[in-house]
Length: 414
Ligand code: ADP
Ligand code: ASP
Ligand code: MG
Image 1: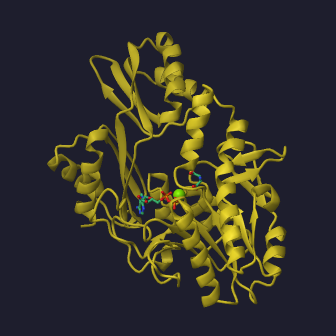
Image 2: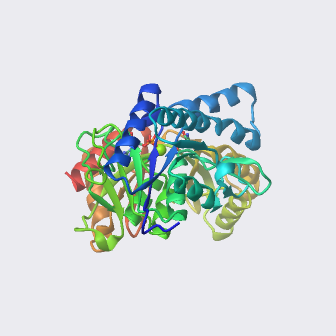
Image 3: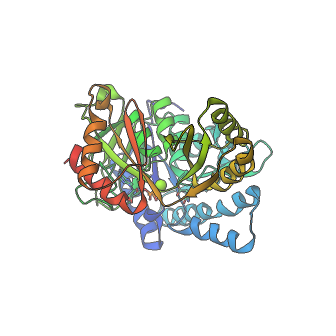
């Protein structure tokens, strides 16, 4: 397809945007209006399942069995998107706009076989190119793929964003629009802090960190694809009433395109980590390496680490791991407590990780000092800290999460 003559845009609508029939009709109107406003453009649509549907399917599986097999889980989870794509396609057809719903195997969205968390390996763009060349709008199911073995896979929660950006990359789309239930990317979750500011532009690096650290408005891998394949990416609201996209919303851009580089661009939080503490372990490097070797052997992903002296030659060592791995981590450490000559191990799930992110941190010092002063003023104690070039994360008790987000936002952003 000659994209210079017929530019392609990808429009992705999230779960709330297709949450009921009236919203699906609204999305159809939006697609129609877009087409009318720019008749030369070829539109490709990607949809999520209706809001709440994927959660409902997860609950069904858990009611049915203790440990759903990942392969069957994917067959189940992929059904949510099949419903919305068919409904939107039939609505558009009734409006006189040619449209065709497509599942991942039809579009040949190939992934690896890591069920429930698969990664896209390739997309055969010809199927979609043929449909748009014939003047129809492909309506593609987000979140799903097909493995080499021919099995249905899913890309992890929130994965429709990945489908949209990966498709946009494969089609060399002019723009990928991520329509959602907020007007764009904010300086913090607008549902948590009314002082959150809508950001006009965010750099890829910042967005990648913000998404990984809890800003669920974009899936981190979709940001990675946008950065890797230079896909112009914008986040905007389905409900703002504007049918001329690109005017409002947040553009995800290269760092060089930022007008200014504020010290902190965003404050994020997440609850899905657990903290394990090995108590009374000998303070020597052999014990440390035994502990981390055992966790690495079981593929436990470790995020934060801290160590605290407790008496002579003894330490408490704490680590944070994804909550879903906390059972495995606990079992692993319990198994080596005698070898480590430690007193025991505890797990705490009542924690939250709050992070500040900004490319400006590259050029300034003193962020940590300001963050600690600010949290101390609020009486919030920090259990662990983790920093990188453009972010700083602190671990706090969950009940202080909201207060910590608001305080850090007020301190650095206003
Ligand atoms: P969709 O169903 O459209 O994919 P999501 O629920 O995945 O939408 O993401 C949108 C939600 O992300 C918003 O409703 C908002 O509460 C949340 N969110 C968290 N952090 C941010 C942020 N920094 N900016 C915007 N939204 C955010
Ligand atoms: N329906 C999937 C989910 O709820 C994918 C998505 O919405 O992006 O996680
Ligand atoms: Mg989402």
